[in-house]
Length: 226
Image 1 (tube, rainbow, N blue to C red):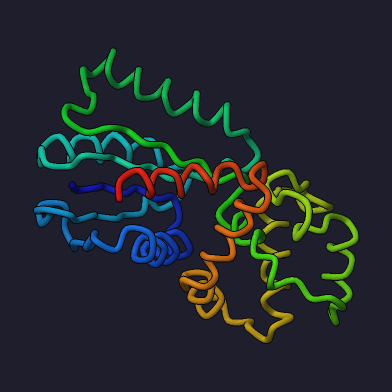
Image 2 (cartoon, rainbow, N blue to C red):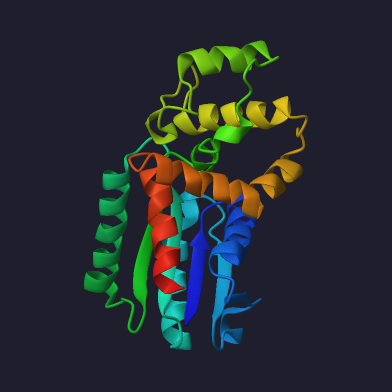
């Protein structure tokens, strides 16, 4: 079994998906180039941002078809200000457009879409152990009053007074880890990539099955291919 992963971001997504795949599907080994995949491998690449996603999907389909030995093409995207349903429809409409206008479609691989609602950092907020009982930071205190994501579903949280949901969710998560004196962005991502952090997210959805529905989509896919 081989998997081709196309993620949206260049730093957070590549760090987290590599880390979590090592915990969830340990039999898979990453390869540096798509042509290097043999057995039980995965290749992961970033599209370089939301605006470049559709051309990257097209390129990925061509690459996967050319190799002929990938079982899945997995595309991971942020919902951002859209909804999971609208973004899913948009991507599947694009796939249909490629098939109709360019006769391009996956030949031997299955297409899997993982939508991060609202963004990857929204999932990170599901770890209940990172929430302080008495926060020292006034800004964080205000956010906890606005929406306490340790108890309410992070995926349903609003944008507060930020322009976008993603901006607020990222700031909220950054402040939570900063409260634990983890303020460097690379160290924060490394913390989330750890098995113990992932285990807390898994424990959250076991305790609250209605929470983090899109995170559960990713987890369920990994469990399916073990």
